[in-house]
Image 1: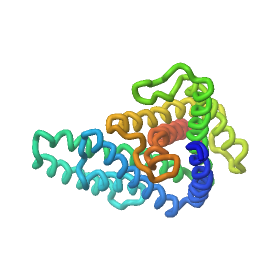
Image 2: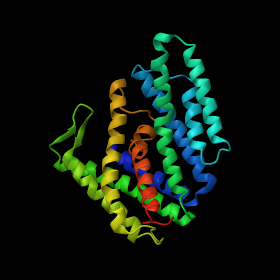
Image 3: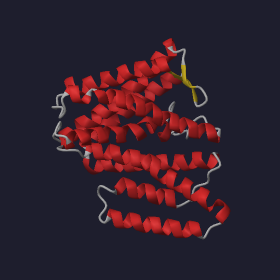
Image 4: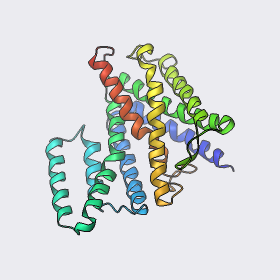
Length: 273
């Protein structure tokens, strides 16, 4: 069986289950995202360690779990300040030659993936439950559409490499096709899903370009980390897909970009969620 066939056979039922839980929302969705976020955290620590930047064994998980639970955690700010103070105190007492490197690696490993998944979680919590779902669905469809169109567009027409030192398969032709895929995903969520979309298509259409930039940047960021650690995949958990960090790498930066875009549209009165 080819690698592409394995990817499709796993991705279709997995996506269906993921979308169903996204539709349910509430604690089921929050629990799923927290679990995925912590698995991504584990993979991030492994990649950082392989690359020679050894994070602390405890604090990345503490920071990551705190970030993911901010929407539902009482006294979240105070808890976060306490974690920060404890982290700083312990790092100061460690070997000074490695203390700064470990502190930076710990903070990055603790923040990077969980912050992206937090923005994904907050997108689902926007407005009424139907509004939050259709916005989250449009985010997913744009990211997935971008990924699929970029893959096949680059495979069959790509000749100009985008970042050969990081990802030799990414091309500018694939980038262009990816924009079309993101537009297709957005239009599907607006016109084919029987839930009113809370934003005019004219105001939300630029999001396709925004996510077509930040999605691949998230992919390239993880690829750069893997290359530094000499890894092909961040893990071997998902058949044909590697690890959760491999599968959700684009969403880590795309979700914050999407959330902020919708947030500022709401601030300026172009959307009501």
